[in-house]
Each structure stands twice: as C-alpha cells, then as structure tokens.
Length: 172
Ligand SMILES: [Fe+2]
Image 1 (spheres, rainbow, N blue to C red):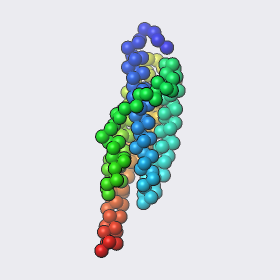
Image 2: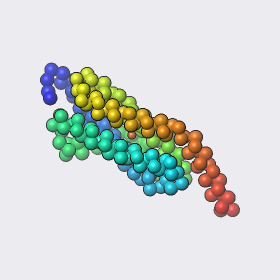
Image 3: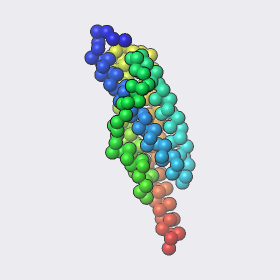
Image 4: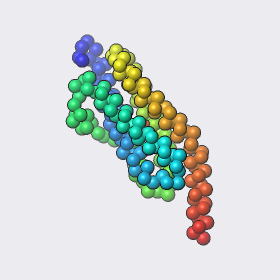
C-alpha cells in the first residue's frame, strides 16, 4: 500500500510498530503484578481482564501491520523500552509496590490512550477506515482501564494503609 502519501504512511507505520512494542511492554509489566495481588481481588480481576484485552490489542495491531507486509519476525525485533522507567516499578519488590504499580499503571494507560489517539489520526489521514475501527476498539479499552485505575486510587491506597497497620500490629 504505497502511493502518493508515503510520508504519512511512514509516520503511521512507525507509530504502529511503537504501539506494538508498547503493548508487549504492557503485558510484561502487568503479568508479574498478577501473581502478587492476593489482597486486592478487584484489582486482580481487572488486571487479568486487561491482560486478555491487551493480547487482543496486539493481535489487532498485527492485523493492521499485515497491510504493510510486516511479517511477525520484523515486528518482534522492534522491542525497546518505551516506558522503561515506569515498567521497572512492576518488577520491584518494595513494600508499597501496589501503590507504585497503581501510579505506574495509570500513567501507562494514559500513554496508551495518547498513542491510540495519534494512530487513529494517522489512520484517518491515510484513509484506512478499517484500521480506524480496530484502533478505536483498543482506545475504548484503554480509556475504560485508565478510568478503573483512577477510580480505585484512593481505595487501593487506604486498603494498603489498613494492611500495613494490621501487619505492624501483628508484629508487636
Ligand atoms: Fe492498556
């Protein structure tokens, strides 16, 4: 699909590859969190659901990338740590891990929202209306996840506080 608007297509393609790397990174920061959230069942359930959504988002991006003749081997090589600093928090074993992860997850979801909005603008500019539909589906999921996290920031913090107080009492 090369024609007169090559510049737009190149920028769009770069954005798609970056989003693909970003979603893979999202998986790698969510998966370790899942094994350590036993005291936060609601958070755990939502995170598990979003892992499944993220896997579908990756497939959607791969469907779109196929229109550019991008084989999966090319896609895999992109890698890179777009949100490296925040992702590292997902692997930390600090006592306040759940709080750090909540903040990092919220930042990450908002980064993804921005990425999809930008991709939708590029898909639109390059007249890829089928892509717009797929990208809008992923955008909707990211917005829902960001708002879930946002709505649980206070609850998660207070739950962490209660558990920390209970833990301290138990030790005395
Ligand atoms: Fe996401």
